[in-house]
Image 1 (cartoon, one colour):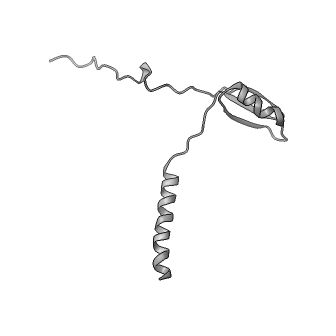
Image 2: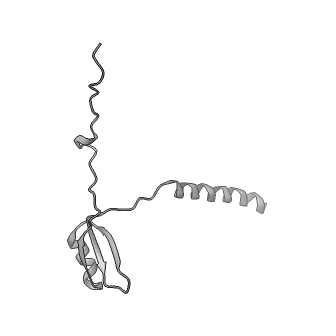
Length: 92
């Protein structure tokens, strides 16, 4: 009886692991970085606004600066996403 319960639980655990690891986690890219005053230079570039960054470092110590690697996402309705017309084909 005990072995019969372990097989479905094991299969459920495998399924949960496949779902968890199957979805790719992407690093977040935000425009502001916090540089903390710590022994090692600690940098977190996870802030949407300068004020949000300042509120974080105010009590800890450090400063905020722009993220040089930040690239804003292009919205789906932006002209760059629109389908291009194929002018290479001649009308028949």
